[in-house]
Every structure is written in structure tokens, then in C-alpha cells.
Image (cartoon, rainbow, N blue to C red; front, top):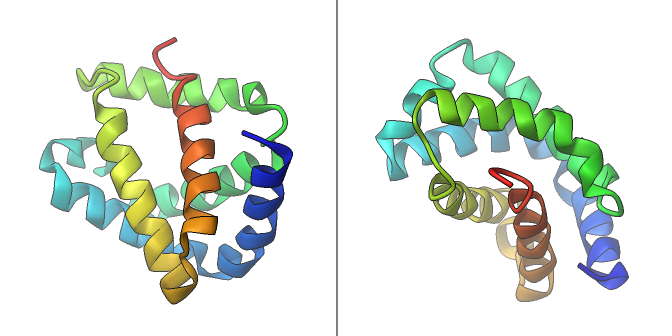
Length: 131
């Protein structure tokens, strides 16, 4: 990820920040649509998952220059994935859900100039799982 990518993400984040609670609901619904096997990950109180989604999204943007800062959160999520017998392949589905969720949040403003840096960020963070 380049400095230009980080700048695009930080600036575009401001466009969707207020929509993050709605995006969280969309994310969990879309994950279930694409792979109902993911549902046990989100069976608990969905509002707590939504709050966690919003907080983690903000932290991810905040730490683009130091992704390793999120390792404690990533390792907690990884442990939950392993508990439910998921492996790194699940990150492909989550990546699709992530991009779909961004598209939902940005609407018509979700152009290739915005998509590419966000996908790079996802790949950066997802590479820290199962490592």
C-alpha cells in the first residue's frame, strides 16, 4: 500500500463514516447470503457485532501505516474463525463481502480510484490472519 493509497482511504473514509452502522448490518446480512456457514460467527447480539464493526473499521483506517497495531484484534478474530473450523479460505468470502459493503456505503461514488486502495488495505490486513 502506498502513501497515495492511504490518503485516498483516509479521505474517502470521511464519506462513509456516518453510514458505518448501516454498513455493519449490510455486511452481516451479505456474509450470510454468500455463505450461511458464516452465520455462527454472528449468532450473538448483532448490535454488539455492529458496534465492533464500526470500531474496527475506524481503527483499520487509523493504523494504515502500521497494520500490525491491529494484531491483538486480528488474533481474536482468527481464534474465533478457528473455533468454528474456518481456515484462510474464508478470507476470500469476507473480502467479497467487504467490497460489496463498501459499494453499499459509497453508492455511486465507489469508483475504481477508491476501490483499488481499499482492496489493497483489505489484502494487507487479511495477510495478518493465519500467519
